[in-house]
Amino acid sequence: MRFQDQAVLVTGGGSGIGQKVCYTAAAEGARVAVGDLDHERAEATASEIRRRKGEAQAFRIDVADPASAADFVAAAEAALGRLDVLVNSAGVREIVPLLDLSFDEWQRVINVNLSGTFLPSQAFARRLVALGQPGRIVNLASTLGLMAAPKRAAYTASKHGVVGLTKQMALELGEHNIRVNAVAPGVVRTPLTERYFQDESYTQAIRDIHALGRWAEPHEIALAILFLAAEENGFMTGSILTVDGGWTTGKKM
Image (cartoon, rainbow, N blue to C red; front, side, top):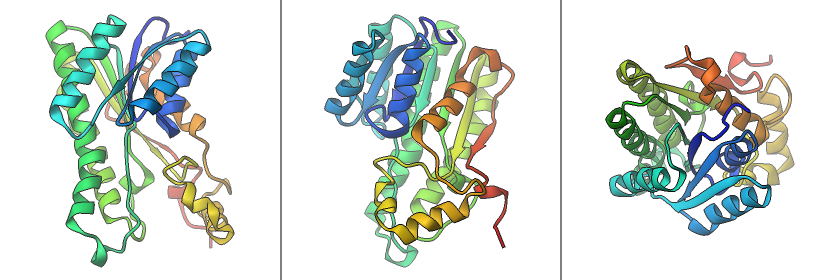
């Protein structure tokens, strides 16, 4: 198994894509640190992994808080005995016209999505460098890290930032044998996006923007994330892997 006995740390592991990453990594032999702002959700994910005979521990993390991010990395290492992979999956978004977007909401999305990728990554990389050990970081970007969409100013800015940060970290951490990549999904049906699917006309619009005529399921994105995290792909760093069903390929006319 690709991650046998490796420690895989996941932020946003209590639901959605992050949860599927936790389940899939554990199924491939990983020791999983499930991080989430909601500790009960993190514990539910970890408990399910243990029910399936895997190894997992739950941790509360506020990814936008430097001390919390550092504590998560330290606690995960203490519990799992090592550090190998960090997946930054925690995220939020807004649906607000640009002219109506409050600064508080702007700041919330930027803090969680962009600072919340930087802080755990920095803490993780600092520890690996101190240990003289290699590692892998995979960030969750978005098609909106490559383009724009209505009513998503903060989300689009934050995910463009994640794309840039991924490249910057890859550039600076490569000499330490720490690889950094990102996945850019199209629309994925998760608790974060569930409201999209309550209106049939909107659901059809989602189908229409993807060349494959459908949205993604969380496990499909989890598989792409773990592809980037696998040791066998050791020459990939600074890559943004688009997993979007053809959304960014072009518009159907």
